[in-house]
Length: 121
Image: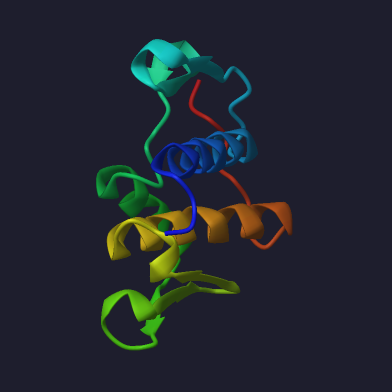
């Protein structure tokens, strides 16, 4: 990995915040005490880049598939549509794939390739 753990964590939080905004959530605030972010109604921001329980539903809701290549170990990669992540740039293969799913969904939403559902009231 080429960046520090703290920088990686910050990049994950930034992606999660960006995705939340694209999904229509406007009341997002930093919460440094818990090293996370709060959004509407003081709910914790889903850990889309860090937890399969949060990331998995994104895959099924938006029909995101993952293909793999480059062989075993950290020399490989995963591709989600036009987004490719290299395992060597992430702490684990799982984290690379979750990060890639969020990155791919952000790309799709920003480019009008899919529509975000309306946030729950």
